[in-house]
Image 1 (cartoon, one colour):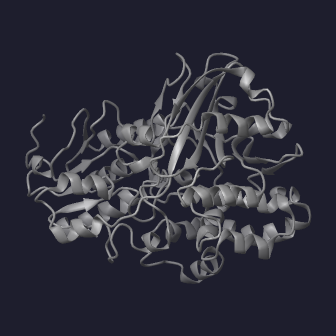
Image 2 (spheres, rainbow, N blue to C red):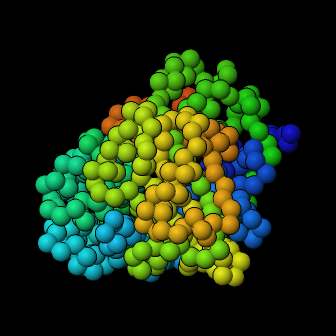
Image 3 (cartoon, rainbow, N blue to C red):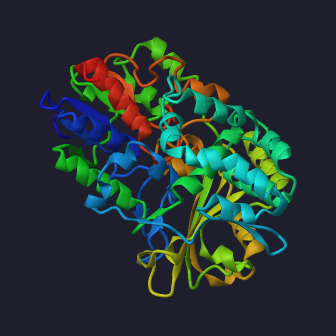
Length: 478
């Protein structure tokens, strides 16, 4: 085990996007920082591996990255100079329907509205100003939820965002197409669509379609981690891999520590460094539903019934608003959905480096009860077959991970929860602790994972805000 001495100004535990962002922010302020990673490779939720066959490259967790382009911090970094290249699919999203049609999301608000018939004007009214104001609004949406820079625009957003997705679509849209599309986007929240604030996720992710797109990273999500690591090292930051932190006493008490971990791991390793009062509060943190993940090696592209769906980067499978809402409600109540809502990405259609010539990769997952050991493989395949008959016939092989497998891969995914904690109302504003500065724990310890505001997603803002807290408190840098 390497010896960590006062040679460092700060230590970051965990090399996911938030840990790397925290380290970069500190290094940008001339601090000597080291990132500690327990695995052989860096990346956390942004890793790419050969999970099925040789030369078929699959994103292990995150695959599509609208929040990365929306992130005020990510977009300020020169990551393109360090190897990161974004690819924008022909269409950001397709939502196939049972009649062979599909709602296609274009980067243009007006083109998307044309897809929605009599709901086109209502869709434009919902997203036009939100998209127009995105360059300034994103700073508040990806902020700490404590202070906002643009209160009037945030009030306008909040009036719609605080509603349930069901309440919003019922009062806004008349046809099933628009309702189904909004359900598919809002269900990324892993919240029941009749819960307050579930509409906010549909609005934020829906607006990002038009403001920045839903891109993939060329070569896979590992390229994001690699570019961040290369940039960090250019700032004289260091990264140590194959170093498992089991006790914070492994670090000198006079060096501040940033933890890209969720409350469960922090309690386990904090031992005497954190007071029992903080650990007791962290122990009440709630985790949300889990995920069941599949990766496919395919002999040819997916035979979607709808031709335009073949040109979409992301697909939401689950049918109508009511079907998706029912599935997500069951998962939230720890029940077993027979026809789960399935999220799909087909990166090799747009990035030939992901698979051998003429072959393809497919990425898919569904939400499941936290900790579920069930195998949802056939249910996911059946949902794909529903909109792409013959899909089974083109499968060369596949890999799957149930909820416990997800946690084994990344300890932050407690019970398979990929968001670092339930994104319910209480934990939107008190994540993980209800305090003005939720990133600061005690005794020079800070939390910088997606268990803090603004929550899940590859955007690095949790790490950025935590690093700012550390800079203020430890070094009086504002």
